[in-house]
Image 1: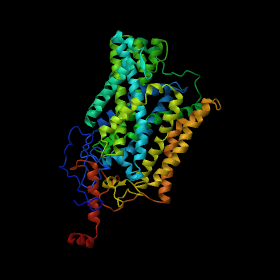
Image 2 (image 1 turned 135 degrees about the vertical axis):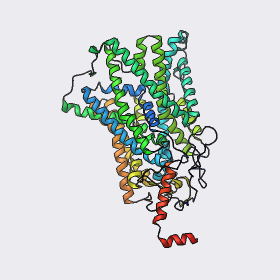
Image 3 (image 1 turned 120 degrees about the horizontal axis):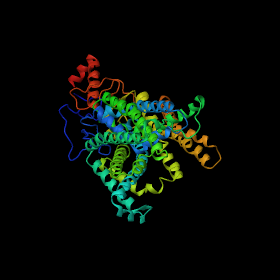
Image 4 (image 1 turned 180 degrees about the horizontal axis):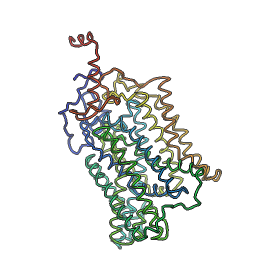
Length: 562
């Protein structure tokens, strides 16, 4: 089928053209003739075949939810002073919002078969897309180091329990971390790199197994503690203060909802990197449904049940599962629990903080930096940042990660506005890989000034919202409640980014609408994947066929003669 609508005039992938790249492919991308090597490699090109099922997406979210951070976050909401049923409502509402936003960010990547930094090229320009990619990559490096350090702390507990002589390694230290910490960190650093290096299929198999494994241990832990405590001694009210009235509890419920959404803001923005592998958008949505509201609600109930049982069993509320396992003081419990929560942390670290910067840094210079090289840049960077020195420093986290994380909302808002409102779900896939000034996404020297202005215009007030109120509280100038608005910085940034970009594109349009053109992935059409290896090829083929059918007879005759 001709590809007349593309500036590259490159051939479409045929249904039978399903081959694997050499070695262990990260994406088995289809680098078509005419793609610029400065914009394309096999990791960033549209996928040749999308085959992740709903279960694979479900397992992805299990890896995100089933972590020490997820456990502590869910458990902490029950201590906000509101009733248990109100906490559950806040959890459900928050996670449903996450589900809706995850579906929104998934579609452009799933329908085109490209990762987040590439899909941004139709909004920011083929060069401008590096700006959101680098921002996202730096955030991921910082949190990659933090999560690896937390997993290393869990591994330390196991090593100290089974190798008493290792206690001698606790004293000597280097760059702020003791020798045992360095050993545990190095073990996990190598283990994560090994899984990552073997490509997305190895990662898929890992998360398919890791999520359910954590569930098994969580259920065993809950049953054990409840049986020791006695069901009659379990209280679902973990509030440490006086219960709030209904009116007073509403702002707290809103804050709880914002905390849930903010906790998942990173995985939401990164989700396109995984949704691109979904065999259909329907499969992605189904996986999101089971992986978010259903899975998160069950995990939250299991969390509060376990945390509640720690009060009668240990005499105090423990919201950290690692410390809970440590207090059981049985070799099997420590071994099983410690290794399981290490696995859980490794799982979320790989899917949330390793894969995304790999794509981000590869996007900067695809002809020099492969997906694997990009991931290793992130891994090495996580050590250089020495996260153990600043993770427990509230001010360091507040002023560094706080500023960077505040930009996640604006980037999300611009992407959603660009795809659904401005471009109306139409993307000329091949033109995201050309440096030609005639390309649809060249804009002005490779940059769309509207997108850059939207990120700047939304980013500045969002950063101020995230930083200033809490800074005033830290300084003692403002009461503690004044910092609550910072919990809503993601919503503020997302809303501003969405609104500013939409307005700018209406005042001075830059993003092409592509109506009636061929070679376009159109997200408004059904998913015609039968006989095609991926939805990008199928969608382009359908729009191309529709364009030819709608072509006037005289024009068709002229085209035939030519």
